[in-house]
Length: 304
Ligand SMILES: [Zn+2]
Image: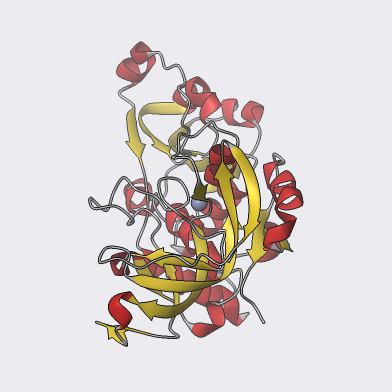
């Protein structure tokens, strides 16, 4: 099986005959069509994110169901050949703290063993890079439930990167047309906001500064490194700090399905999507994905 592994902190491409073994917990074998490179993969690959040694990278993917544990022909709603993606945080017993590609084997491989609870069914026409984009879209949906309370107020997404761009596109689709994108820190400082959705953690004090009293800072980035915060500034302005994780994966699937139809396309994939590589081209793929303003880079895996 073709795969990309981290061995002794070195990223490697391997071809062998080992296919993942199914267990009562990891009970569905998925044949991977496309997978996307995320900042998490880069962090695991360069050692800034802790991870067990000898794991397969990748948590954003789509594919088809190949097999069930114990040779079953079906499992509840699931049937062989169904198109699926997944919620990558549902790989542990607590469904919260275990991510595939970071804490256990991921999807930069021809096959991945997935707990059935993590599966998300997708339409067949999303067996493309769009289907592998489900997790970023679900993450971009996460601020949505907090934005309703700020309708007609000053809201911005801050960041000069594709995550900020995606968060903006998803917020507009969800009806929050007032949300603006701010890319430069000088531009942010020239206005006051009721709500800021950050995607670049290093500007934490600038965000607190740019918020009006009573405002909310939504933490969208998932930095693993600490940043300094002056508590007094937060206390005196009565700022709320709200972490966000994921929105509804099924709504995210609808957004992707609407984007594949071409009519009233929700996501502008021309802005968001970059090149597609083979797994064996992982060095070029990671080099491209590491660039600051990189678009989403994908691997084409089991595609005839
Ligand atoms: Zn991701």
